Length: 398
Image (tube, rainbow, N blue to C red):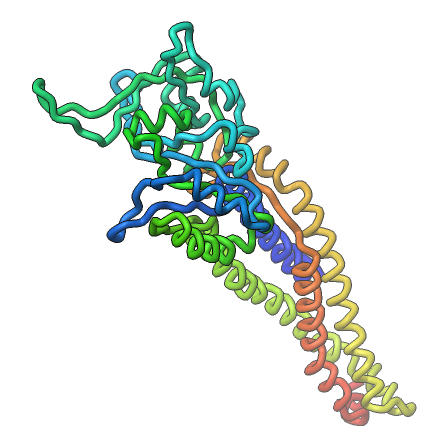
């Protein structure tokens, strides 16, 4: 019973951890990443949108598009003192961005609206950075940092790259290292000046009525809009941008289930050995039952019932154990980290920095059904041997 319970509990816990990781990763990505993004396309590379306003109007004519927002995106080097950090600079339209993402809700210091704040001369350039980047670089609100872009200009004094000093007015914490360390936000208008896009956008972000239909919706929209705005378009929905992560999870889950199901099979072999021992110990009792008229099928049912009870009690115990540990696993991991001073979940490795679990009823039912079925199957051979035991042969040795 204990073997079955431990196997069932282990499988429930592992699947709940994988489900929790998948759900939390999806939630965090979708909270800061739009459902899809559309870019200009020419000669096999992405180019700026010639008229993002017209493209936005075409998008909003569709019933399945809720909101749009332009963005300017480019690579840069963030200089803090003598250190440099490669970052992605994203210029966002502060009025439209809340419609396509919830990045503004993840600010732990300052506000996303402060990106538009100006000094007395109206010349202050503002920036918001991720919490991890702020902690590693020792940056606080009000500090000044410099952004260098890859754009090189040749002047009489020699070549120099475009750069600008920004004031840190916000710090956000998404919970994903990709964003908290490698993304900085600036105002859309300032980004167009920094990257000299002449008020053109790098792309247009879209929010749909059904996020899981994003691939089909953006494909239909891009094909229609390309003709109407007169520019070739490329696009990427959220599942394509992060598809490798979710594909690896979907591949891992069935493999984990199969491998850990072998633990249940091993526990079922324990039932086989236990019942064979019972048959050997009860040879005399079986013979007496047979001699007073019990049919072989009656003996068969007795041992199947015994093995099934072992499996049922083990499954119920494993279910209780698994659900109890799933509910308190985050607390247990936190205690282990505090006591031993280790980082069980590093965001650099696992993308998220906290352990969340999600027990799905369908999977739990499948695990319990599998364990019970294996337990019942494990009883058949010992039960059959018991039912075929000759009464006279058994009583001769009594």
